[in-house]
Image (cartoon, rainbow, N blue to C red; front, side, top):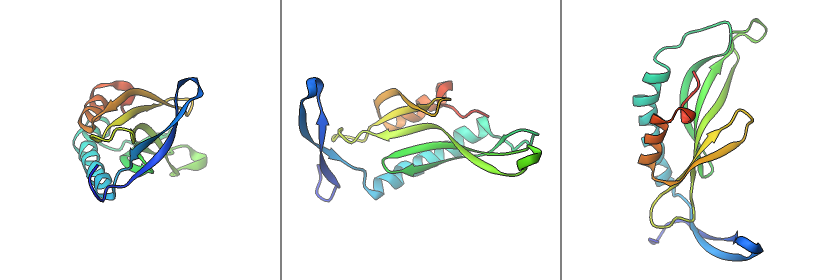
Length: 149
């Protein structure tokens, strides 16, 4: 670990109820900014042209934007919808469809668990310990990880 990198120790539960302390590495503000820039570029160049080339209002909920945002150590890919129903016409809401969870225990390089948002509201890990490049490739190719438009 390089000097100046944020690090901490966390207790990890092991099989058979054993515990041990492990060193973990949190992402720095600069690393988060670089990851966010790569993800925004991916959204602009890949996801929006393919899944939201234009906003098409309907009488139901319809997508108006795709964007990403950090929440702690997790980066979510989100679709913003606008309502076309007469009783709440124009109201907007967000629905995340894929999430990158930073794997803090991986000290050598930045790795993520690639999460899928189920219709039940639960997040399920589909891929573990992938690089950012692999995660973006998987989002581009696997339909479960793509926006629902």
